[in-house]
Image (cartoon, rainbow, N blue to C red):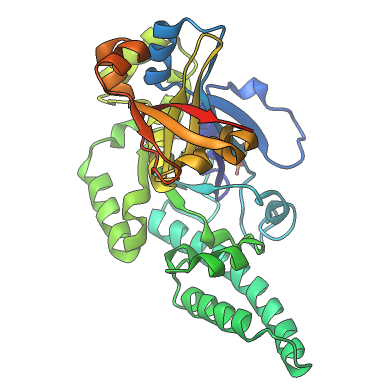
Length: 360
Ligand SMILES: Nc1nc2c(ncn2[C@@H]2O[C@H](COP(=O)(O)OP(=O)(O)OP(=O)(O)O)[C@@H](O)[C@H]2O)c(=O)[nH]1
Ligand SMILES: [Mg+2]
């Protein structure tokens, strides 16, 4: 999964990036062009346990790719929204918008005082305007094409619908679209089409306070569609903790009353927001986690591994991770009748351990 970290300057994007990737400030190259990119393993303990069971030559965890962008202020000196930024967002699947909630530090807030709701509105407006300008340009063209008798009516009405949504200050990801319309819009790389997570970057002393609760309530009221995408994080301290060994990190997190690291919490949230699940393949050679959309038919899941698996698909032998762990192995599962034979259309579930039977 490829996740872009965006937001106003000095909101704590790089700090969160370091917390999510365990990288330290010196890892970043000075004078870089474009975003900083880092890939991290999704340390799913199910993979670890399967590897203990199979002792394979190779263990492959799923991966998350994070991109840390420079601060964006439209019309400001650091504005990246139009040029380089738009060019580099193509394959990003979701955005994490970092909003500063921590109080004044040595660095002043670029828009004056700390005001999270204003920042969210301001940033959303910029995203919306960016998508609107793409739509307006395209519509102009289409109107000319229409006059020349080209069959563009459908696209025009689709884009008009998008335009209305944006003018109501909503996001394109709120539109209920048919698959063909969705495909048609894909090529535009609209910013507001992607799931949006808002990371409220607080000071550790603000964790669990009514100040933060009230802020969340306010945000949910103004932006109902953000309610399942709000993420409270004490970026700076989590960044420091992410540099520690696992044991030390656990102690510090507990002291702070943080149940799970930002690194893990955000991974779960991204899977949920993007509707992704994991299935596993196991064997003496490799134990591997695969990330797919929820409910993908077995034949398509096979295709994620290899196109031959999809083309020559016969059956999928499926067992849930929990059942496999309980009985201790595939042969045992087979004996107990826990190994299911599923066909092409079987919707793959999170935690399925699958062996594909195919013939090409
Ligand atoms: N107190 C406090 N300071 C923070 C926190 N997060 C970031 N900062 C500080 O804010 C400053 C800016 O943080 P960065 O992470 O560099 O911000 P950024 O959004 O990447 O900034 P640009 O890339 O320049 O847009 C640094 O001095 C950080 O130490 C936080 O959670 N608490
Ligand atoms: Mg930065």
